[in-house]
Length: 481
Image: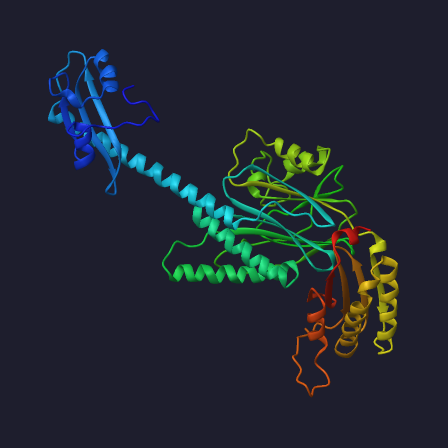
């Protein structure tokens, strides 16, 4: 080869290579004459033994940019290159230009997509005290993503989503969906309500894209599941995503009883929240349809997604959670996925009963003082007596508000997790709000005080009413004692 792949080559001024680089035009040359001084010693040693006597040099140009040079040589007893040969060479090179330019564009787009994805996609899922997770990709060819979100009351949200379109546009949509979901998760709605709000955001964006005369937004799927370690239950909703698998972790897995709604796209939809109990030390498997599409079995029970092969693989996997995840994915090696093949495996760890204290209260104002004393005694037993003063103030305000403005029954609960959580639940669905009282106001400072004393606070709603909660950070070491 005259010019080894990957080598660096220079061309002296005046030869056909240098002229083609300068004027971007094809050139024909006859080799072996006295004026071949422009041939470098390396090229001459390569060409002379091969008997090369004619040369065509054609520049590769795409959109006005020089991509390289194509050189064709003639050896043996054939005649030198003619103008017809030059025209044929130019046509061949023009086709090569398109292929090279397409490859260059694809490489640039892939590099930009990977950079964008690294900046928008979540990192490895972070465990919570009550959920341990393992994530695995069989093949990363799409825009699937997963998330582990700590919520109030020691609960954990497990999320998995998939965008149908690959490339930069699909990654950008994945980033928007994830950002919108994280913002909605901070408000702590039920899974069905969260996906309904996310569908509204997605439809609004799709409408803006349509008005901008761009290509319509692709469909996306999402599954949002919340595990409650105190109640030992799960709440979940799905927007076109396969239902999760649940089981004991060392035995048969089964499909969770979940209604699958339409995918997220240009239309608004309402989604229902499904509730089901979950035994201690259970496992939950969230996965993309790209993984189950590798299975050769037919649809099960009329469901649009096939999970029998994955369910079988997980039922027979053994070892740690990470080993079980690898063993399950290993069953699909050698098959080509039609989309992103992602598996998020989670093992639940319920809170020990000693870390939860619950009191049922009446709607009598006298219950406030009793609730304060009970909380102070519980904090002493937990070794958190230094938080007693602040916690008593929080309990006093939360219980008073529930008795005055809520409805019976009223329940007070303390949870010792990575934070000390104080929750007050009542049967009213009216939402409290922070009031900034003036100097002459005798009321209206309760939630303002809670906002100042707690590290985090909020309200979540359920079919039975609402729960107002406040957290104080205590650190993982204290929580584990």
